[in-house]
Amino acid sequence: MMDDNSIRAIIHLDLDAFFCSVEVLNNPKLSGKPIVVGGKPEQRGVVAAASYPARKFGIHSAMPMSRAMRLCKELIILPPNFKSYRTYSMIVMKILEQEADLVEQISVDEAFMDVTSRISDWNEAVNIAKKLQNKLSANIGLSSSIGVATNKMIAKIASDYDKPNGLTIVMPGEEKSFLFPLKPLKISGIGPKIAEKLSEMNVNTIRDLSKIPHNILEAKFGKIGIVMAQWAQGIDNRPVQVSREIKSISNERTFAKDISSKNELIMILTQLCEKVVNRLTDNKLKVKRVFIKLRYYDFDTHTTQRSLSEPTDSLDIIIDVAKELFTFAWTDKKPIRLLGVGVSNFDDEKSGQTELFYNVSRKAAITD
Ligand SMILES: [Mg+2]
Image (cartoon, helix red, strand yellow):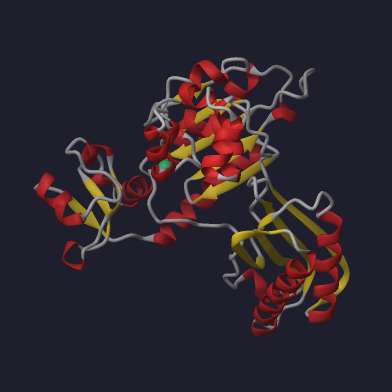
């Protein structure tokens, strides 16, 4: 544990050209060749992932496959093999869990780790990062890029800073000097639409953004504007949250408009419980744990859980526990943008074989 426990050590790890790297592991003859994984050109497919040799031709993910083929005549196109990617992903995450107490998987090839509790000096986080990179390369044969910083936002930008096989360290105190020259679009959470509006305001770097008062950003962008103002100062207090609830059933809903009405939230909570219990009874399962997930307007996200004294599939019991957790967790009554309910700890051997993996959000099948 570090003396100054207000400073965190966060690692973001991103596997390099993950889908293609797995294809090469499965067929070493593909090594060094321009390969892409994605949809067929005749079905208007797009590139989901491109190997680094393919990128030399200007091919990148999200590009139409027909265009990729024109750019590189000897391009090898492979259909995605998600089963194999998931297998490798699980092996990688197990290795990460050996080196960090808190691992938050955010996609099939990306994870945050909080290693603060494992170090006595911040620089030791860098050693953990190097060790991980070497381990993944030596034990599995996968190359990764890593960012080490004092928060998630900066660690994620840092891992992308020097791909492939990069290691970018942003020391405590260096947050602003690292961020300021970069484009706002580099911040995960600022998309092309916001970036374009910022550009119209002559905001082209994070330094420019840091000079705009938060109330102006709020007036222009709403609640996300307040968060953006913090990001521009290098501030991001979001915790790394353990997301690998492997055997769980959950259901969540993101609202078009943030909700602050307790009655309305309880009603939605009840509907979510019904869906979860339907899936439970469909699979003839009983559970010993209920959890709820709250994401506030400012993207602050909390998961609260409770164990049950005996396994259940009773809708009444699960609703009661979910309501109790909600009342317990929603103390500051902040507007909510996402509400989720889940159950885990199945009391059935069958659950070990059933694919019940609804909890980890897997966004677009486009990786880098
Ligand atoms: Mg990647």
